[in-house]
Length: 293
Image (cartoon, rainbow, N blue to C red; front, side, top):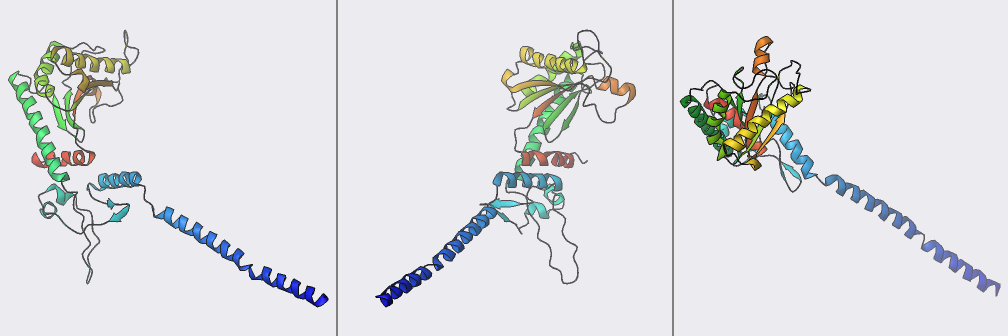
């Protein structure tokens, strides 16, 4: 009887010892599962952050295809477009720097612009140049050819009403007779455009008195008066135009002394391009090349 009990206990102990390996096996599976979860998480690319990084690098290097992405994987392109091979094309100017070549070294790959971006930028530059030319023709016909300064930037066409005292008297937002004539000459060319129009008021650094507590109110009123004339007298749709006042915070660069005081009593009328950020970033360079700058 005692021998039988001893054998039963030995069998029970052997059974318990035989299942002990499952504990270690379960721990190993848990660790491996955690490892693969971490690796999977590290492999995922936040496409919004990737796109923001791509656009930031493109803007910094003046090139629109620094990185390309597909399904979260960084890819590089070794193809060079015909525009990039043409030394006179804007694409060639945007080719990123390559490593210095040496004996036996392979040429570094070059990255071409995104398909369709450069042609779209050229078309947008041509469109804005055409609008600028038409406005200039209208001003010349009215004898006001030098009354405004127009510039094409990455925002669009900026029409600067900056001709000294032509538009506004000191500490005043009332439009002069010449200002009305200028606006009436500009309006026909921007009324039919699909773009948003931003009217941006500015003031010089002199303190104001009377009805305006600060230059912020003065600049905002100047922009509002221009906006109202466009809408109420010239038929510009009210849902396509807005106004903003910048006070004396954004003076014209390079102007000093009495010249700065006169030039910063101004309003900028901006035809805001509706093209994509990539397209608009290329427009100023194309315009500068067209104008031989």
